[in-house]
Image 1: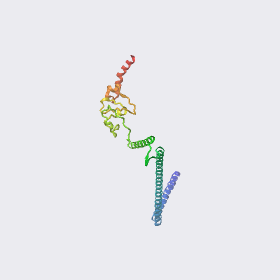
Image 2: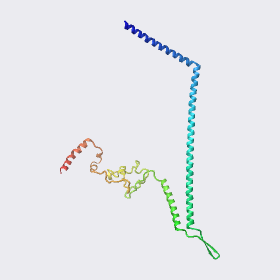
Image 3: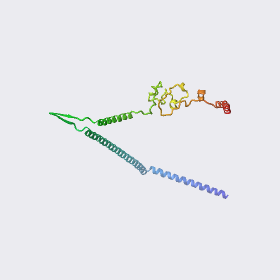
Image 4: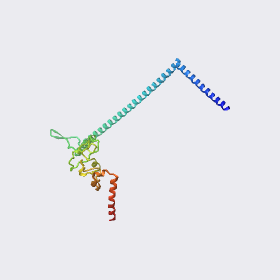
Length: 264
């Protein structure tokens, strides 16, 4: 009887707590509805939203202005560096040209000298001295060096973008095929054997359907018949497909031969 009364009191307290929570929730709901329906609260909420939007817009404008100022500053710095570099390069070229002119003038003054004046009666003969052969040699070497440097510069600009091709062999009948710059030695080259170009050997030998190119000079060590052997000569294409039965069969008939050779 005492336990029943205790359980009832416990259930009654639980029910009261539940009703109290409902009342509190209902009260909060009514207050929230009243606050939302209140024009003053609505005005405050709209004002806060506008202030937040204005703050975000101000931050965005300030960031864009700082970024624009940084870009302008970097561009001005690059322009200034380029201008200084151009000025220094121009001054250097001008200085070099002035030094060359001074050297040429000094050489002309020292070697040639002034023309010789000869008096023959009432006639005046102005005779220039013979040019110094060392001066002629110096001018010739300078001109040749300048011309050679210009040719090297043009050759450097017009050099191919890929590796140079191996020199052709006079014994190669299809040497014109190797002179095609875009495709020789690449995947698009359908005329030359790719395996032979890489390893200087082909398992098909003369029976290969593609051309075997033999250069006179090469940066790669070429070993002739590198992949030739009795197995390739006997089995031909069958050696490309090997199964477990074929391996056991080959081992079974080769083992007695090896034992016989070992006994002898």
